[in-house]
View 1: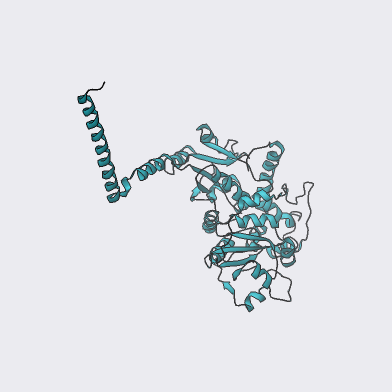
View 2: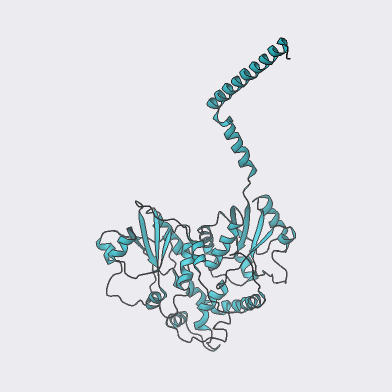
Length: 423
């Protein structure tokens, strides 16, 4: 039997324990009320947050004549981390390793603008080196807190025959993504060089003449590979999965102010980015109509568009200012279309192509104008698709040499490539 003294001791211990617990609980409630940051929930949350350090990944590129292949590479790189930092290679490095860039030095800011506008990019580093040097790699790791350096499965070989990413691989901080099939800057330049490939060395047509040839399809000849530029012309195979990957996946709310802008958006460039940025600022949701290949050809000539409808759609979808696209939008905007998409405002830029358009009987914006929901936007940049084409045509010999060199490396890649998982 338990003695009376022992029972009394147990009762006192239990009472002391209960009172102590009650006092501690009241004290904790009081402290939490005065200093909420010291509550158990907040403290546990902070500890949990501190444990998760964002994974920062780095990818670089020339991004000259930026296209949806670049955007898809950036999308894949972003999926390997939490934050994507992108290095834009300097003009001097591009010239030394690949040939003359299409975007001239004094317009270098345009490339920065283009890369920054890609929805998966968090930060941009200007004037990055073409190859990962020891010094630059240490800068990436120490100053930019980079965890991994990313590149595609196509080899990046320097003029001396070495691998541009050898140091990153040796350091164990390299990850690889799958190259986007069906497009490259070399391929796109090749498409534009088709009209001047076959002229003899004794001919010296003017730039205006070459531009007319490009617009109307004169002198177009192709080699056995389908290219008139000595470059392998690849063909993009569109899939529904790729479109979903590029899409925002969100719909406009019932009360959203939906802004609509349409166009070809061929060779998606900084002029497109800036007009889309302005358009997005006028509402809550930006809907972009992309004209069919047939519509563009009818208005711009048989060599246009350079990029087909699905290629152009992906380039537009990759832009952070775009919420949704209409793939194959009509030339004329109808009342039914405005009602169907609940469009509040239709806009168009002041800078547009001035090629020999076919004359249309009706203004494509007649209906939105009559409804007083049309606005003409002042284009921030005086640059068009024709501007880019003229640069290629004007320097076709330099670009042709560049393409022959790059085309050979691309042929080797396609001949030796193997399946790489991921997309």
